[in-house]
Image (cartoon, rainbow, N blue to C red; front, side, top):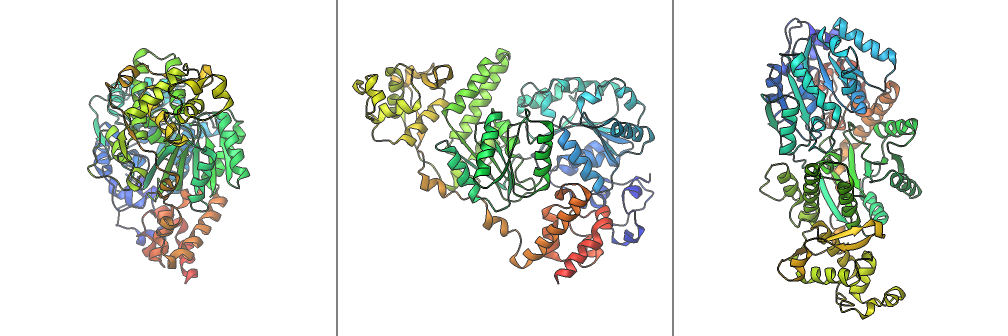
Length: 628
C-alpha cells in the first residue's frame, strides 16, 4: 500500500530528513503516521493503546479531556487501515478547523455540512467514489440525508468516529436527538470499527452512550480528566463588571479569551461595555445575523487579544489551542457543562485561568429552568442532582480540582496547589446560628422581599422602606449587625446552594424558604458555612499571567520567538487559515530554544511533520539564521 508515500514527502529532496526511513510501498504503522504526518515521536497517555486497539478493528469509547489528543485516536487508525475514516460531528466550526489542519499536513480531508455550497459537497462525494480521500467529516443530519448511507456502502470505510458522543445521552449536558439514529452503523457496516469520543461523561452518561450506540462490546478508555495547567477561581457576585475588569487586567497583554453569559442580551451589553473599557470584545449568540457571527468566529480564531462574549452557542468545536482564559458571569447548568466550557482554555498545555462569579439569583434561575421544563420527572431529578454537584463544587472549602475530578470518578490524593482554595484557603465554621437568623428574617418579612432588603433588616439599617413596612419593629431587626453586606450575601448564596433558600422571580426576586428549613430553625440540623474571604485576600490569588507566560520562553529566545510568530502570522493570512494551523506556539518555542539551522535539525522539532518540513522548512531555518 502506497498511502504513506502519497502523504509524505511530495518533494523527494527532503527524504534524507525523515525521522526514520520508511519504505514507500509498505503499509504504514501508527508510529510511522504519528512521526511523519503529525511530527511527534511518541504517543501521550492512553493514545497508543487506543490507536492500536482501533487499528486492529476493535470498537472503543474514549473519554479524554479537551486538549488531550482525542482526534489522533481516530485519525491515525483511519490512515493505518484500508479505506477512509468517517468522522460524525455536530460542530461545523470543528469540521472546518480539522479539515484545514489535516490538509496542512498533507492529508486528503473533506467535510459535508449545511454550511457548504453544492460544489464542495459534490467534490467530497466524488473523492469518496474515487477513493481519493483519507478522512470525511460529516454532520449527523447529512449522514442520514437521502441516499448517503447507500453511497457509503459503495465505499471502503476504514472506521467511524463519533465525536462529542455525550450528545447521544439524555443524561448528558448537550443531548442531540439525531445522534440516536447512529446505532444503525453497527447493523449496516458490520466489521467496520467504531470509536466514540467525548471530553465529559459521568458514569450514567457512559452507560447510555454504550447502549444507544450499540457499543456493548466496546473497550472503554478513561484518561485522566485533570488539566493541571488550568487554575480554577470562583467567587461571589459583588460588582460583577468591576470584578470582570479586574480579572481581565491581570491577564497578559494580547491574551485571547471567552466570557460566557446566560442570555443573548447580556452578551451584547457586556461586549459593548468591555469595548468602552478598551478591550477588543465581540458578542456571539445564536440570534445574531449569520454574517456577524461568522466574522466574530473568524476574528477569534485568527487574531490575538480578542475577547468573545458569548452564550454557550459559542465554543463547541473551537480548536484554538492558545485561549488563555475563560470567564463565566453566570452559573452554567452542570459540572459537565462547566468542564466542557472551561476546557476551551489552555489546550496547548500552557498556564491558563478559568474564573467565575455567581450569586443566589443564578441558582434560582437554573432551578427555575429545570422545574418549568417539559422534561420527564426522572430527567428533572437528574438535572437537580447535576446542579447540586455543581453548587457543591462552587461552595467547597476543599481543593476544587479534587472535587471536580471526584465527580468524574477520579481520585486525587493531594490538593492541586493551583486553585483559589489551595492558594487562599477559606475557613469553615458552624453557621447554624447565622442560618437561623437569615431564615427567620425571610419568614418574618413575609417571604416578599429580595436579598438587599432582608440583609438591611438583619443589619439593622435605618431606611424609609424598612420603617414603611414596620420591619424595624421585628425581633430579627439588627440581629446580624456584626456581619457586613458581603458576608450576609455569602450566607444567602450558600443556603441557596443547600436548597434552604429559594428565589421567586415572579415576585421580583423575593427570597423564600425551602422545604427543609424546619430542622434548621429548630436546631436539629447543623449548617456548615465557609467564611467569605476579604477583597484583599481574594487578590492574593494571582492569575497565571505575564510572569508565568514569559517564563515559558527564555529572555534570550524571546526576539526569535516573536520573529517566528510574525512569520507565522503573515503566512496564515496569505493562506487564509488560523495561525495555529501552521504551527502551534509550542513548536515555535522549541524552534526558538533549539535554533535549528538545517532541515535535518528542524525535523526533530515536535510538530514538524514531513509535509510541514517540505513546505516551511527553508523559511523557518531562514528566520533562525537571520536572528543570528
